[in-house]
Length: 84
Image (tube, rainbow, N blue to C red; front, top):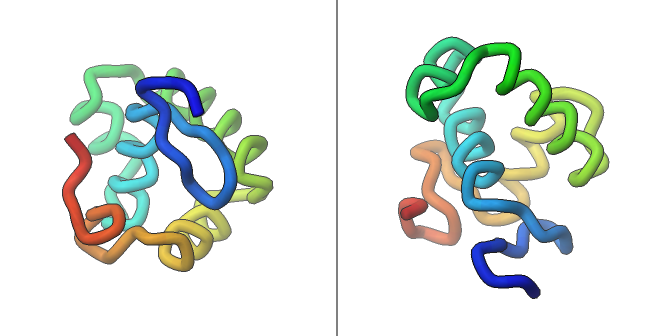
């Protein structure tokens, strides 16, 4: 695995992608996620599209379910730890 990448459900994701998933499992809105990450809602939409492709999910609900099955809790922690 490359440095600065995280393994999630057999896929390599960037820290930003992991943080997006963390926000999604906390049921944050796109605006809240974008504001927190310092990006536009449009950029977030593009990054979500890439995440859906990488994780073989079709929408945010499927991604949230996959995240919960693969180590994310309701507070957005991954394998019991907050993302750095």
